[in-house]
Length: 392
Image (cartoon, rainbow, N blue to C red; front, side):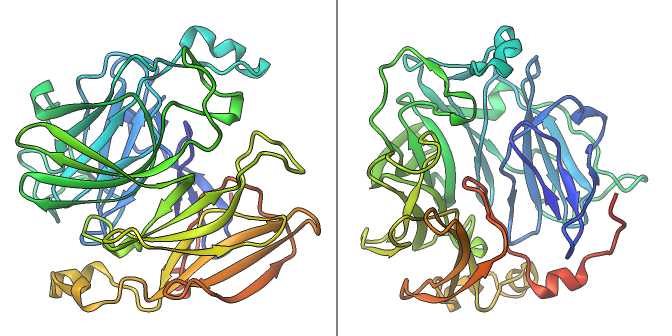
């Protein structure tokens, strides 16, 4: 299992014991880079797409790995003139969309990091830019591209600034992508959470020239991107939510449901008030904006949910039948979530029926799972296929 974290390097984790095998430097061109904490796997091809950013030029690098972990292609992304904090991006069948938000890493302030001073700044007078590029550059097939003699994909000619379409939206920080897909040949639809500015509680938040924001000003939004006319229409779907997820097999395809965590209304709490707390899971129907909630209970707060289908759809299923998603009930599965009780100081794994949003069952855990973690689910079948490696 490959894991990444903010501004770190990938780590290989052994299954099922979760021991750290090693760090994974992809190759020499990825040294001294800070990886974007979110990668995306295309459920139709099993390709993994990832980004890493740097504090000096060139500031952003893109890579695509095949299902065997071999680099298919990699390239520097042009058109970025300063060190910028990146967190997530959108992936469709034919496009990659990344978000150039006005959050700049202040290299001159990095020495103050351990004193609690955030080494970032946010300029709310600048627009946020969407960078849209073709997912498969010229010379690269959609799947199963030929490898060189070493079994590695070679680096392509670097992109030009004309390779990327830039579209501006009002200044904001895009936090997480729920899903993105191509509505037609000239229209992309992206569901994402955003805030009016960058809020990083890890080191006290980003410096900004804007007054303090109202609490929990994070919203799930729909962005409709017109590629022909370089225009974006934005619509707020749901306020006071974060960590949006969908069923992963629908990633890159039109979906109906997104599951988010809903903030509490106040920061009055037992522990660190800078860490956000979530009181419920919200299921939103994207077709009509109807909502269903699952509340964690008094003094109980949850972390990111993970959708686990009752019957998983694999890339091979897409190859046999490209319309396989149309034959499945999208919400036929379960939501898994760690919930912490701040009174009893205990953690439960809560399993929620995704169709009814009722609790199916819960399991008490012997140890606490801290707030703020992203989650992943690995099936027994996937564990059995994992190659045993020694714990280093």
